[in-house]
Amino acid sequence: MIWDRGRIAGRELIALGAAATLTLVCLDILLTGEVGWCVDLGFVPLCVGLALAVRPGDFFEIGILPPLLLLGAFTILAVSRPDAVAQPDDAAVQAVVSGLALHAWALVIGYGLCLAVLAVRERRLREIGAPSAVRRSG
Image (tube, rainbow, N blue to C red; front, side, top):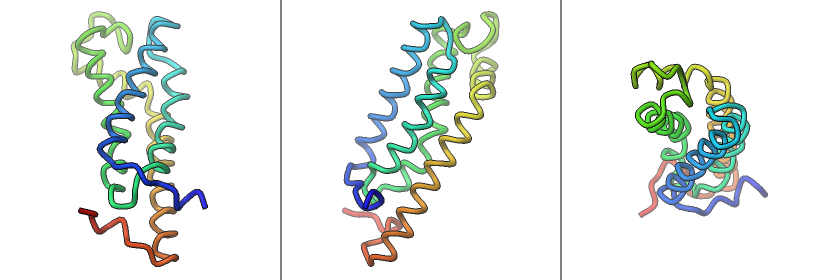
């Protein structure tokens, strides 16, 4: 079943999630000159994919990852190219907040689906008697 398949370590998926998010941001900037729909439409399935791929012992890492991915990407943009995420004369903090506000729907949907998938996987693991995601594997 799809809920039973996740076997990738959380640390590996964190690196993959960061690389994928930055790739989405770069592609969107190359195509449109700013962060827009490409990031939003790619971020939601990325969150779901990370939640499906993670091994049960690393649910926590992926459970807190989606907001951190966008925060990190928008922080990098706010410092290097604020006009891609906010007004060109905005300060870095204001550019980060603007970016998060403009893409809040993608963050809420992606994060919600990520947590929902992790909850379903945890419930499925309890039903089949597998080791819980709450216990950390060594």
